[in-house]
Length: 452
Ligand code: NDP
Ligand code: 2IT
Image (cartoon, rainbow, N blue to C red; front, side, top):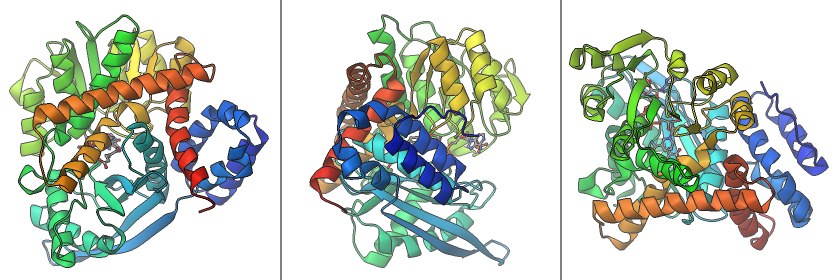
């Protein structure tokens, strides 16, 4: 699956070869690492300290990995057991920060790839946050609220000893939203007897930040808009396809509309809907956040829309802009080519690593805009950082204040990626720019802090 072997630097190659031996059974993690190391060739060549201090060898190794048993009792009285994870990847620039994912596909490779990406993403936000990620192979789908609560309580009973507001601050991701964060927070508070900002994405009545729910989707559009405007274009009148229909997808849809474009297709893991009149995000909020139902239900609200079984076909719907907001490797080389052939002018990633290496090669070859995940979806964690600030000062800011800060951060990230790409001779390549700009701050902090 790792086909883009273009690294030539001997030091980078030796780190990657070593990692491939040690992590042979972690394909997603190796994919994420290889993608970053490729971009770092000119950086490592320009500064011998990275090799002398073995910064690359250290940055690809998590500082700590915690795996644990999560036993819980289902509604029929049966004892279930799941596997829990927290990967504390890098704390050079701040406490570990990153979401929790509850999905049956979660394993160590998935959590390590997400934790690795988070290190560079958090650095790009300019806020003092290290990188981490966690989760479980628990599937919240089809579970009662009571089952989800008992699972979350058991999960936190172990996790609480490894986290804290100045140590490691988890948040949501796939399968972890407001409901799960509430249960997790309640159990942490009960065991530790402290009310602190140990989690972000909290409810508004107990320390959550306004605009955190919207932040990843809004931030994605602010990033894409900055890129389009920098190239003399805009969202106005564009047709947009968004995969997924969860937290990121719903609020990306809302912001796309505010920016004058319309979303004509969205999906879940069962299939996708097409509505050429534009999909109303308020209907999706009702279907997904209130009813927890399938996207097919959209036809009950808008009978003229079309539903197609199977989610990967969504990339054959002709569009100007594609916003993958579901999961890793959801756009392969073939899907990328279909998008491009149908006139797509830009792909901006709301999900983490949604494009395979073959898909990324196709974007770069076609010269379309490509906003990589660690830059384009950083608005969620950036706003988590703003939630931490509000918790620390025991104040809460207005929606407008947080949203304005988010927009400024996303525009700053775009500018930083564009500048880094240009500085290292890859003008316009935001993928390389994001990896380089994210790396430099963390690597510099590591150099200052000695061998640790
Ligand atoms: P949600 O759980 O709210 O929604 C996930 C959506 O993606 C659902 O529509 C789900 O469909 C679909 N999906 C999940 N897994 C698969 C799969 N294997 N195949 C097809 N569809 C799938 O999660 P989020 O919206 O929070 O997260 C979406 C993506 O954005 C993830 O990659 C996440 O890592 C990333 N992200 C999230 C951030 C956040 O703040 N929440 C921040 C930055 C990135 P179904 O309901 O059928 O499972
Ligand atoms: O992938 C991500 O950046 C997230 N799931 C959000 C993490 C966070 O700490 O808000």
